Image 1 (cartoon, rainbow, N blue to C red):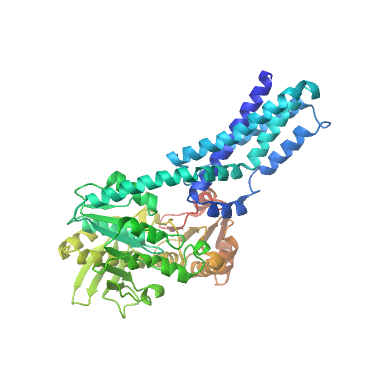
Image 2 (tube, rainbow, N blue to C red):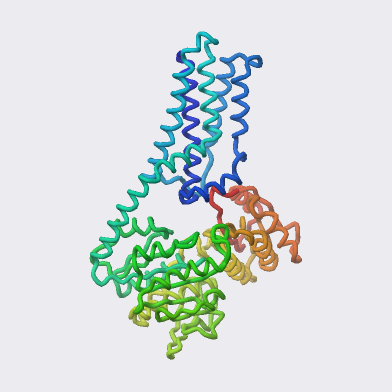
Length: 534
């Protein structure tokens, strides 16, 4: 085989490996779950340059169209151009090269390159009999075929590795359980909800740290493996309180985490229409979130947000239960009253059924943040944190990044950042905050809409559009995924059509924003879809 052929092989192999990196990246964004990854594939397949690879295969294997050496050069140049463009593409969330990713990558590469090597060995003896470039071209065409179906090879690698991953996960799980058992008197608080759980976790950690040595699951480490990693790497013998965020995308997810950490206390922040693609209906969301309450021991405590219908109507009989609310206060044990918003933050009173009145001041804004704070305050009270310490902690709580946080730019523009995981309730609250800036400049929203709402996707995004039409001066709708529904909702109001701006991407939206932005304007960033959505 000539140096020329070897060079072509190397370029094609590099292109194949880059394809695998993209597929594994999307697999990671879909939590390594093949069903979720498959749903993404059905939407994305054919949206990239797979058809270009089909054309290259046809070019290579057509004997009369072009000289084979020239065909190979065309393939190599095309692959190099695509590699360059792939590397230039920016991702909102980069691929995290964990040990699991390296295992998947290694097995995928072995499967693909091993198969290509087998083709080389099979076709090499026929090179001189059928023409010098016949064998190498068959191999190059085969590698391009693997690039077209790279996602399938990744799935096969994941399936092959399942027993290995299960063994590793079981070992890590046992280590985490042993560590939890080794910490005497550890108080474990589980927090779950369709939304608000991460903010509530941060607020509770800040308040409890006034009295206790606390640990919380970092970021969005709310899966069993995320919790296990937190325990193995961060839980110390002197830790007094472990705050464990519990996420779920299908029934049984919360119970799995509860069976691992055995919480004594639980907070349910919300039950709403999130992840309906996997849950199917709101009733399943409710039963899944309440797996936390159902797992608590008899002497445990549940703290539940009654502002959500599917929380308020769910009876709790197995443990003591305290309910809190901002709007649906009729049956609440704790409620927020006298709420006053300003650009500097919020003041409000926590009123308890036992006669408690606690005046609080916070830098946070928005009803959702006040609700999350209220849940944290209730739990802190029951864990014995003194009122003055709660008041001090709340006044010093920092805004959680991308969750209705507010900042001002040097140019005098106010940015409301609510880019994390938008939902029907939170998005409306964010718009209410934006609508309140009437005495400022233009009120502008940049949004791609909401995702993972199942059959309610179009309906809820159209309703979101109606709220936009009543709350802002300029709407920049990003991407294609929810564009039609959002724009239709906006047009249902009396919103000027010329103030609806369409952007292909967030980079494009930023460029368009730069053309209309003035000092005093207020910009709301509502949601930021992951790379697995268009």
